[in-house]
Amino acid sequence: MKLGNVGELFKELVEIIAKLRSENGCPWDRQQTHDTLKSGIIEEAYEAVEAINEKSNEKIEEELGDLLMQVLLNAQIAEDEGKFNICDVIQRISDKLRQRHPHVFGDIQISGAQDVLKNWEIIKGQEKKDRKSLMDGVPSHLPSLMQARKVQSRASRVGFDWDKAEDVLKKVEEEVKELKDSINKLDQEGIEEEVGDILFSIVNLSRFLNVEPEGALLKTTAKFIKRFKQMEAQISSSGDEITDYSLSDLDEIWESIKKAGR
Image (cartoon, helix red, strand yellow):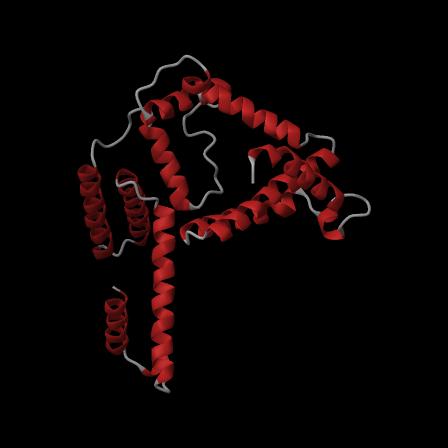
C-alpha cells in the first residue's frame, strides 16, 4: 500500500464507524459508551502485544486494526455527544509530538536518547502545571509491574537512580534477606511488604538490563503453561491421572520436558 492512500482509507474507516453508530446502524455499536469500551481497549492492546511477541506480521496487522477501531469508536461516541471528534484527536497528538520533540521540529540540540527523556519530562511539566509532583499522572490502572517501571523511569529522568545494575542486584539480595527475616519472625504484614520490595527491586533490575518485566513474566507464564500441558499429555498417554503421581514423580517428568525443549 502506498502512503498516498492513507487519507482515503482512513476516511473510509471513519465513515464505517460513523455508519455503525448511526440511527440505522448496529444496535450493539449504538449502545456503547466510553465506559463500556474501557475493557475492550485494554483487551485489544494486550492482544496486539501478544501478536508482537509471536512475531506474526499477519496477527500484528490484524490486532493494530482492532486497536485503531477502538480509538475511532471512542472518538465517534464523543462526536455524537458533541464533545470532540477524530480530527480533534489527531490535531492534539500532532501538536503534542511537535512540541515534545524540539530537537526534531525546533532548534534544540541533544546528545542522545537520555536527553530526549529529560526534555520530555520538562516539557510535560510545563504543559501540566497543575501537577505538583513528578509522580502525578502515573496511571493507577496500569498492571503493577508496568506501573513500577514507569515510576522508576520518571525518578531516573531527574537523576534519582542507581549507578549500575550490580548495585540493583545487591538491593535485590538485600530485600530477599529481609524477606527471610520476616518469614522467620512469622510476621505476615512484614512478609507482604518485603515481597513487594523484592518485586519492585526486580523491576528496577530489569530496567537496567533492558528487559521489559511485564513481557518477561508473560513469556515465563506462557512457557509454564506449555510445559504443564505437555506433562498432562504425557501422563494421559499412559492412561493415568496427574493426581496419581507424587511431587517427585511430577518433578522428574517436568525436568525431562525442560531438557527436551532446550
